[in-house]
Length: 219
Image (cartoon, rainbow, N blue to C red; front, side, top):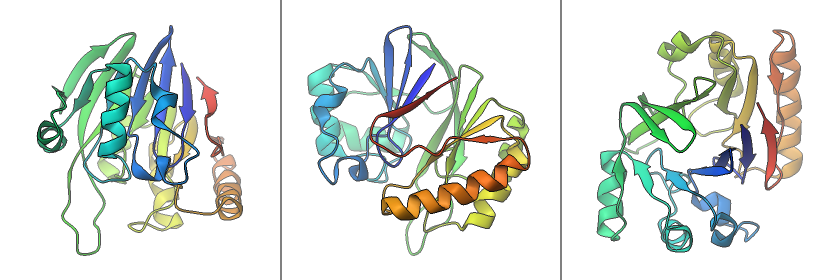
């Protein structure tokens, strides 16, 4: 499985020629480094929640138009999509198959935000190997302890590095792919990733400090 990162929380999972696009949000497209055309060959799209850094409606509409890919998401996002005449597959909880991917949808709680309502949010377990808790640092997710790869928020207005690292320490994944860094300048991202890498190395956890557009790992 190849996982490519396209700024912040936008990912493409690729297996056997099938591409699953996850959370193409507004930070991904903000500076023009990524355009909808990059995703014209995706086979399916998953949206975790309604926040604009995970759901950029104008660009999602263009991606759907270019790719004709089905969209999988929860009820709250689905309501917003319906208003834009985008059809969707309701995916809130349980196991479903998309191409070669076995996806287990799990309800997860977004971390508290300043003067902002908590959205409905759906995380994923992908092929029993990848835990994507999205913007949740809920300690109940420790039941997935030892998973191959954790997709980890690394910078956010709702958490500091101590809380983030503590969450990952409980999960004890074999590897970590950092997310949620699209609002920071490269020199700052590099310095924070170096700090995370040093911390997780003590526990034998491999931290993949990638942030360049389209940079990828394989598991």
